[in-house]
Amino acid sequence: MKVNVITPAGPKLRNGNRATAVRWSHFLRQTGHEVLLEESWSGNEPNVMIALHALRSHPSIKRYAATQPGRPLIVTLTGTDLYRDIRFDEAARESLELATALIVLQEKGLEELEPRHRAKARTIYQSANPMQPLLSAEGYFDVCVIGHLRDEKDPFRTALAAQLLPPTSSIRVTHTGHPYNEKFAEEARLHTLKNHRYRWLGETPWREARRLLARSRLLAQTSVMEGGANVVSEALASGVPVVASDIPGNVGMLGENYPGYYPVGDEEALARLLYRAETDEDFYLTLEARCEARKYLVLPEREKAALGSLVEEVMEATSPTKIGGYT
Image (cartoon, rainbow, N blue to C red):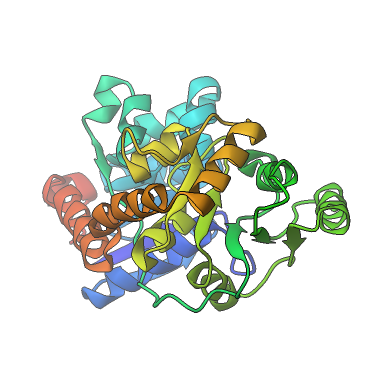
C-alpha cells in the first residue's frame, strides 16, 4: 500500500513533528507499506495520506481532499493545533472536517474535540527506545531541559526556578535546544553567564541530548502548550522522572494526580518541586514509580501496532468504488 506522510518540518529541523514523521514512516515500511515522506503533497496518488499539523499542512490536506475524493486522510493534531488553532483558525478547523480520521498524541487531547470529531479520533502515544541510565556527575543533582527555545516551551522557567534555590542545593540545570531567534539565544547566554546553576549548550545532536537525559536525575518539561512531548516519552522509556507544568498535554502523558506538576509559569512552585525532589528521597522514588507505571504507553511496538491498525481501519472503511478503483 502507498502511504504519504506529510510534515511541514523539513529534514534539517530536529523538532518533535519531524521525529514523529520519520519514526512513523519507518514503522509503516517495516509493515510492508511504500512510504513517501514530504513537506507538502507532491500530487501523487497514495492509498492514504497521513498529515501532521492541521494548520500548517492545511494546503496539502485541502488539495488532497479535493483531487482524491474518498481516499483516506488521517490528520495528526499537534499542540498548537489542539490548544490554539482549531479554536480560532478556519483552515485548521477545515482540516478536521476533511479528515477521515484524527490522531491525538495523548489521552487528554480528545477532550479538546467536539463530539463529532472525537468519534473519529484515536490516541497514539509517541514511543521511544529505552536508554540505560548513565552515571551522574558527582556532587550535583542534575536536571535537564530538552527543548527548542520558543514561546510555547516557556524555555527559561527552570533557569528562573534555579535562581530561587537555597545555597545548600546541589541542583544544576543543563539545557539543550535550538533558539528560534537571536533574542532567545541572547537570553540563554545571559542566564548562563549570571546563573551558576544553569548552562545552555545550544542545539546538540539527538544522541547527545539522549545521553544528557540518561545522566540526569530529572527532566523539567515546562511548556505552556504541548500536544504530547517526544522528550517526555524518552524520559518514561529511560526511567528518568519528570517534573512538568500542569497543562493538558503533560497530564495526558503522565496521568491525573501525578505529584510532579507545578502551575504553569510559576517558577517559585517549580523551585519548591525541584528542591523537594532533590532532598526528599521518598518523594523522588514516588515520581520514579509513577513514571515507571506509564512506561508501557511509549513502547515502540505499541505505537507501531496502533498506527498500523488505524491505517488498516481507514482503508477497510473506504470501499474501492469510493477511491476510483485504486487498490
